[in-house]
Length: 98
Image 1 (cartoon, rainbow, N blue to C red):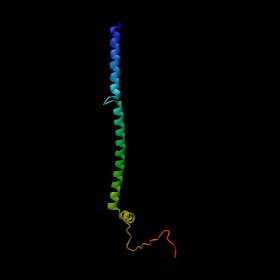
Image 2 (image 1 turned 180 degrees about the horizontal axis):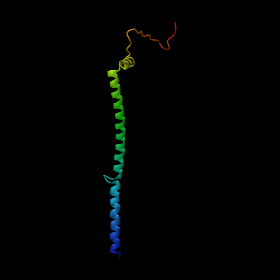
Image 3 (image 1 turned 180 degrees about the vertical axis):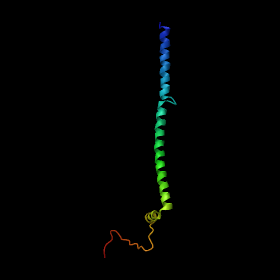
Image 4 (image 1 turned 60 degrees about the horizontal axis):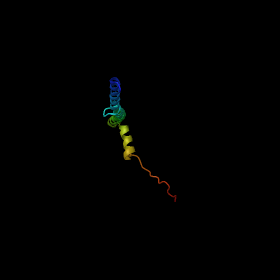
């Protein structure tokens, strides 16, 4: 016959093992904690990128409000605007000379 002490010790070890498994793999276990940490790190990185983009956009807005040369440069690049005394000459690429 197995002593009562050994049975209690085996039950206690089994309970501790089950508790450890629940802590590691349970609904709020370490795997969930690691997933949440990775998600947090991703959100912090995205937040930093958005802060940088906002700062860049803020600077561009300030330049558009206060820098006429910058406004002219943007209008030329993005809208194809030309000055009053300028002439546009278009050159065909790959065309045959006559």
